[in-house]
Image (cartoon, rainbow, N blue to C red; front, top):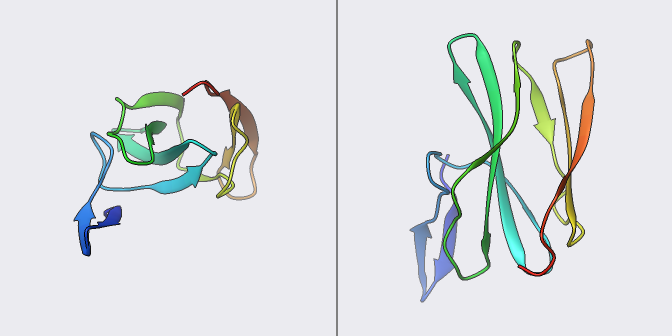
Length: 104
């Protein structure tokens, strides 16, 4: 599913590089997109960010797991980290807080 941005009375596709959309969250200055990708038997979680009216940065890998998983992030995040939780159903849950640059 695509990410659409409304500007000048029109909707424009605004996906990060290498993805067709994902889960969005925002800090006071940036928007972040997280998504997972399957390659063979591996499942990798990525993120990319951009200023509100800027362009997406290159994706960065968060984690690779050997089994399918779901993930969640809050819609609004602090300026210095992205809290991320992921895991398969009923087996385990992992958590990290990705550091972000508040000067961005």
